[in-house]
Length: 130
Image (cartoon, rainbow, N blue to C red):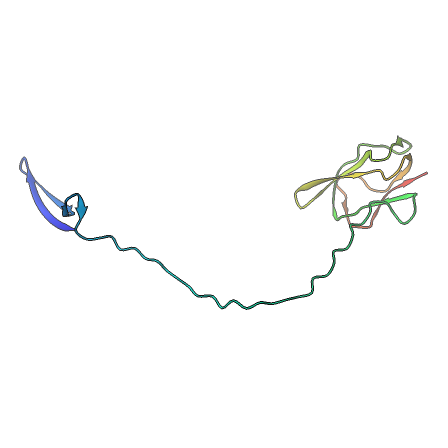
C-alpha cells in the first residue's frame, strides 16, 4: 500500500493506494496455515452396562411411583376415576422438558398423593390404585 496526497477541486485528500500490475496485486496477501501435531495415545476403559430404566409402577400393582425427579405440572385424572392402561396420569417437568407418566394398568384411582406444583423425587409414590 502506498499513501498519496491528492488534490481535487482545491480539496486535499490523503489516500491509501494499492499498486497492481496486470490486475494482480504486487504483494500477495499473507495467509497463515497453522498446524498442530497431536500425541495420539489409545486408552481403553471398562464401560458399565446401562441399567434398565426404572418402571413407573411401584413395588406392587397398587402404587405408582415417579421414575424421575421433577415438578408436577398437570394431573388430568381424579381420585375415584377409572383409568385404562397407558392413560396419562401425570405430566411432570424435569430439566425444562415435559414427561408424561402413564398408567401401567387398568384400574380405579384410590388416592393421589401429590398436587400440581409439588416437587417430587424418583421413587416417590404418586398414586394408589384400589
